[in-house]
Image 1: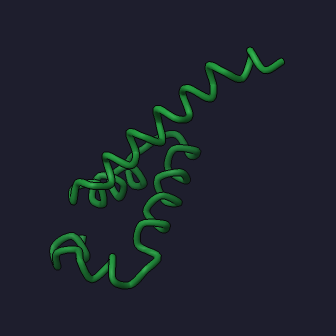
Image 2: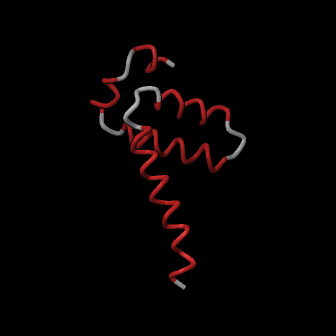
Length: 72
């Protein structure tokens, strides 16, 4: 049974690593907002919203954003 999970685990860890790298860039917030607004897939929209909420849960993270991004 464990051999079935190994490819999924590798995919999970690779995706997590890529997300950590993406969140280092300031343009990730507008990109997530764009995904929420335009994606046809409801699961993708929901996941983007969860990632955005987690990222902005602390008010200091919100205040770090430029005024243009916050208004957008």
